[in-house]
Image 1 (cartoon, rainbow, N blue to C red):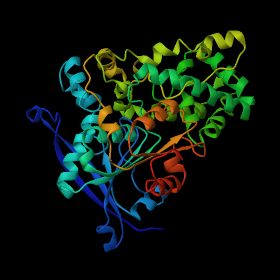
Image 2 (image 1 turned 45 degrees about the vertical axis):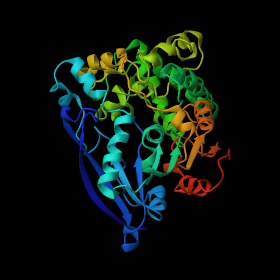
Image 3 (image 1 turned 180 degrees about the horizontal axis):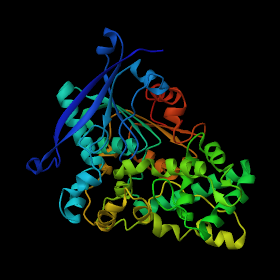
Image 4 (image 1 turned 90 degrees about the vertical axis):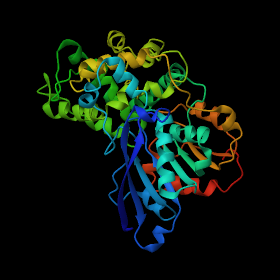
Length: 428
């Protein structure tokens, strides 16, 4: 096993990079390098994690992609602003900011453009004018595209895994592209585990007829139950969902405590990461049009996800995917205090641009990007359109991995990107 050397770094950055007098926040990053003096001399690689709202991964020493990375780089794992050991954003800190409007204005400074400007402060602090390499996974890929748009001088190379955004796509465009993919994942799951069709229907009927509460206190509605489909986008997600469903009842009349605890674990993990819920749709916002709870609105265009109708018609109940719905802020006790600010953000009309299309068309930073053909979280066709619009991008379209390919491939995905970045820009 590769021996890793870890070091902590904390940086002070403006809350608003355009208004340094508006206050400051801290941003934390963990340096990871291979043991020995050779690790100190390697070039830097900044890792931007998925999200929004997730801290950088905590290295245990057995992560294949990280072991591969430290073989070539000195890696910096960034806790993006508001996450991990950076100045936190949660229901307690937000409540001290004042009105709902003030909280929403504060949160507007936690998107990809601010994360990139933080990264530039950090880069200049660590290595001055020397550029570094960035690796963006999922939402981190969105941030990387923003980096390429507004601060390309800071980048030597860029790697993107499952995170090429639609440059002109709003939230409605993204969800309209993703709902059919989620439906296809459901079909694959039920073909693999046909016994789950009736089992899911039995659970849904029980939830329709009973008020069921999870150990965390949130209500398990049919819609909340459907949101377990978020698992289906991972390499082992279908198996996880099947195992979760295989023994739901106690004595045939009550949902078992063990079953409810497993569901609670799946549904409550993001409660500690409120930025994920609060800014998820805002990751697509670039115009003066509100996102307006896009996932909820566009869902009506896909009636196959109506569980009540499916029960009446005796058809399979479809799980949903990575969609944020307003009822989440009613069901979850930890999110309930944030309901008003969530509505305020959904109605917000003033958003900063996230991408500079002319700059991307003239890009000179070598880029290698993995687009997963069956990605359930980032719309493949929007990613492919973007790949055609960015100069000097080497595209790898693959059906070998799911969205979590960087983590699940034991370093193979990163190794492939390191190889193809040396090639001429073309589809691979």
